[in-house]
Image (cartoon, rainbow, N blue to C red; front, side):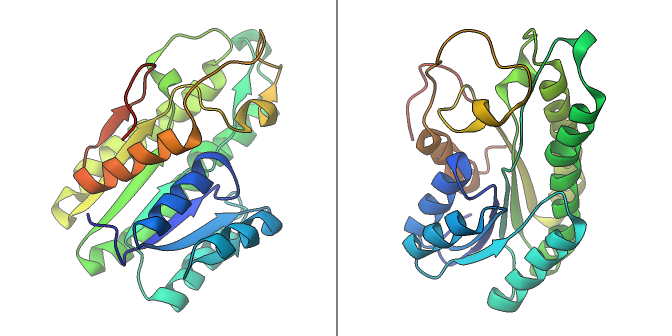
Length: 233
């Protein structure tokens, strides 16, 4: 899909991968709808992206999601692209995973993107096409101590995405997965459970990941796993 003049909703847009993806979509001529909880950051980002729409949204709140989609339709009349990026980490060994923390990340990492997919699929089907990009994690390809809670939430998102891809192929709706490696964002400081061991870890930039999100939209590549040493796009 050529993103020029397409309407794209990006969740978790107030920082990190979401903000970088929104900026890149805007540079490529898309009409970007920015969704996140931090209104001040959304307003600042909207000022950078001409023609964008900021909608303060808690993606774990079903009424907020309905408001997000209705505001998008009111402003632009369609939804061509959904980037489900909002998420949170959890670091704890299996025997010490707090169930309240686990419920919270399942709500954010699985239920929220599922609700948004369910909200936009009928619109995309009526339009005759659409692209959904779900931001997962390269931890789903590893057996990383401490990451079981987080990785299992993203594994659930992966399966939802893979099955939806088959179900929606006849409707010309692509459901793509991006699996980032370590990314230099606020993510480690916001995770639940214990702090990750060791000192600061270098990884990909948010702009690097955003480039691959746009690549998946451009090319239809459905499952991209980011690894160390990969070139930027």
